[in-house]
Image (tube, rainbow, N blue to C red; front, side, top):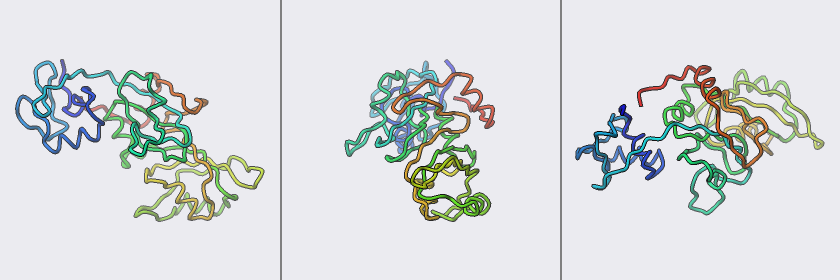
Length: 249
């Protein structure tokens, strides 16, 4: 069997989330062949190397990578577990056999596309700001965004949370009966509530927000609460479009 990273090997044992596993490795909680290893990228051969947690040998069974998209409904937490007992996306993906995790977040009051995968490298690639993967949102705001306001946002942006936010595009979609507006907005920043803060700053609070795409992955007509597996062609298209190079497992 080819070698894989220690973090990926431990993930295959299904003992915890990717983030907590990585933290535990850094803390020296895992041994490989009776030696403590603190590097999540340390390469092991599951057929030859023994990985232990608290002296218990883990059953390493690497899974094939899997990719899904979910249309997260409004009023659902974008995690697999919530200490406060609120509804989570987990209840919508019980029929997915692979252990997958959400890539990035959508807040409780937002809806739309969530990417689910067990591919840690692709996850890190998407959430890393340096790769500038665009996210597209359908946003309903109070009032109507003036052309001058939109142009200012796209050219100069606004300074919030220590960064300058410059949307890639803002396209008017339509007005509502109450003179509010629907917009298509593309951004690359992943700061928490960034769109809500941006439009509130301009005097146009967000009333509804729906993510419709992450890069080339598109929600299309997938109903709320439903999921579908991405095709090999869709995954390959994304990797080609954003020049994603798979590192050694």
